[in-house]
Image (tube, rainbow, N blue to C red; front, side):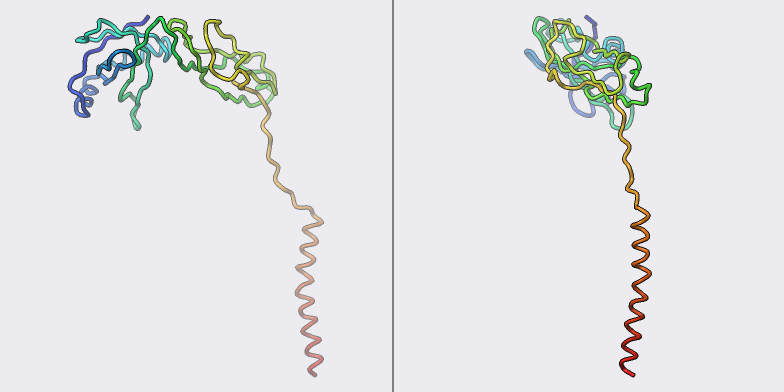
Length: 221
């Protein structure tokens, strides 16, 4: 289990949150079991844990000034800045490590499909697998080996190579990825005969009009 340190956050509010970020900290909240706790953590340390062990990393959170010595948490949600890199807020879910939890695990495609080499398009449909598992058994990611996926073939959820301790919540028949040729949309082509027919009608119309006018003139004389 990875360790992360933090501090109790007081007072709350936008101005206090801005002050934390200027001090290279980020506001966070811990919830899920007995109580909700407002804390601050170092975003660089959080990012380091995620980069090394994935977003579902199990964290032992040690908070200075907390009534609880340490809390077992996972990263539940995070809010990012809309215009520049960085986080604005983090939600930690406190968990009981002896009970299963529901999480989403990213699916990563490994290798190049023979179908792709033949001009096929790889359509990655499900990018995260929903599972239920004990926290200690949550994988960092689910890998799909693309080396044997031929043109017009697909991989379904039921075909994924998973540990038996995981309960998959997706439909087993859902398609994770497929490789297919993209259809080229054909533009309608006007036939030569149709074009000539239209030209003939266009040429005849003025001539008929002139003929009618001539007859009327002859009758008046």
